[in-house]
Image 1 (tube, rainbow, N blue to C red):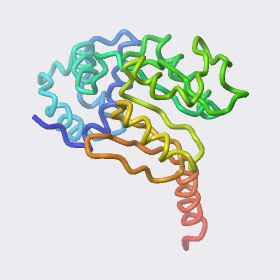
Image 2: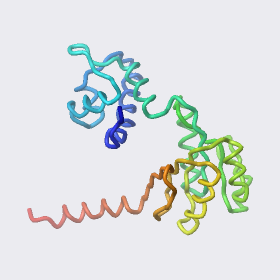
Image 3: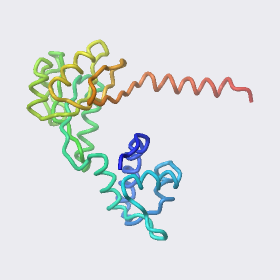
Length: 214
């Protein structure tokens, strides 16, 4: 059964809620409890989980460990995906540190395999257990690590060029923080995180609240 994109977008939220329950030692949970933790309605939660073939038992609910395994499997977190981070400025370093902490805390599914930057002053420095490698070796790094996932934290002016090189080297999924639209071939997924845009949207809503008639 194909999982709708809107459901896929909620699966990481369910996984985080299940992780919280497991950390508390909770063996079973109801759709109401899990939905409240995830911030969705119980009916929506049940529809989403039914897409994974998971149906709670009336009066019993869901087994936390089993449901967590199902959600993690649906998200592809049972594999070990090598991630290359390109651009090791403040944002790239912070993201690398975050993912390394996630790994150390038992997070599954992906790992930071390499760091790449074009700045000679950054190349050769260390972030956690990794040494930053030069941009001219980007393709070699991707092939060496077998990386199919990349994170772009480069300036917008070079983001498309770097994305083209990543795709040519075999990367099929890109998370970009660059403030520009990337054009990639069919079969390559791009997720964009534009922090400035998100702040601008918040500013719009803040202005709407303060100017709305009371």
